[in-house]
Length: 373
Image (cartoon, rainbow, N blue to C red; front, side, top):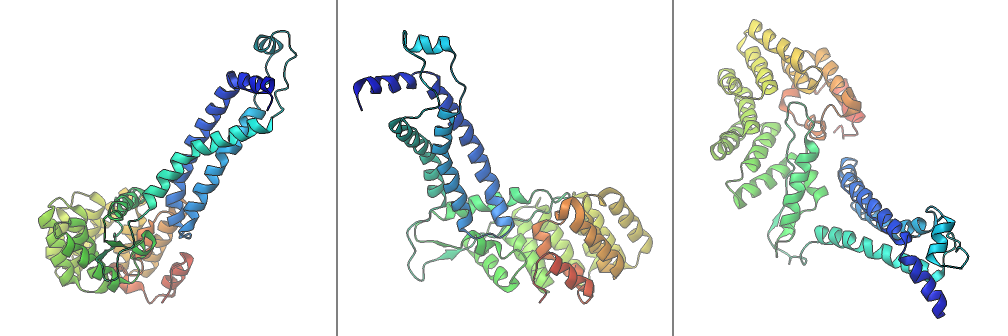
């Protein structure tokens, strides 16, 4: 490059071309980061391949040099006064021309801006060196969204992700991938129980692992084991509301509705308390108290938590009402009324066992792309 040309484009770099380019790169970086944060839960929600997120990150990274060149080319044209001030006595340069060497610099700047984000993603997703055969292994079970409105599952998944990422950096520990771990959401219950028990052996004071073990044991038809696990969770964390729910269900499944009622009545989550009360009062034969609890549940949570209402009807054996409320749960908020956890819970939720032989149950599973077997 001749010296006058070099001086000319270096002179351009000192003006608002550069400010415009870096403002555009900064704005694009913020948008790209937000897209990656959104893409991750969406990728897992739709069970896309593991490489999908990597592809998204790489495409967004390649967008940085494109944005840099576009910001240089398509910005506002300077006024004549600005051009004269920039080069006195000279004609105003054509702003939409791009010297190849300037383009090369812009591409380099764009890639340089993208590098930290790509490096962070690669560091965050990397594991340690491959553990030897027979090395200790662990899987991170997903956390349940048992909030009354069923709108906290992405937060719950994020917590599980953070634990999984932290464990992935433990030397010599084989960590099951996220897809494998999250397959335990309602599938292969015996394997899920085995993993949950392994977690309790590694960390006996981890209340959430005991809670998941209780939930899965109830699902497989072992409420006595579920009661033991839920009781252990409550010993560790007396305020663990979800473990209390599992404990109440285990008592109900063991034919002890009076004990279940005592447990549910102490639950501070109103939806769980009303649902459990209706279930226990039904088994106790107290139709008036059952009806009162169910009416309150419908009045307060009919538009937010139809799934819990469907459970009560299913336990009572009222199939038509149960499927009506299950359909409402599915349709609520565009099919997200039942969280992804509860979609899979249909496969093993013990409160639904009285309606599983109904053709509408298989139809609902197919509607949610779940295996019917």
